[in-house]
Length: 86
Image: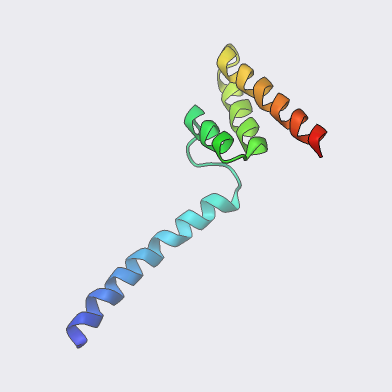
């Protein structure tokens, strides 16, 4: 009995030690890793405003990247269409 509870409590404490890092990342509102893939994931989830934010930040770092600008434009069109439907 007591042998089984020891490893479980050890596992729980290791999980808890990771939680503060995860919650501090979300508290600041910015994704920990900024990448086009993250923007694509947001698009696939219908989180268009967050996707635009990601691509805008990427565009700030690489202003000549036409792909990022096209994504921003495309998402903007999706949002316009959605707002017109309501």
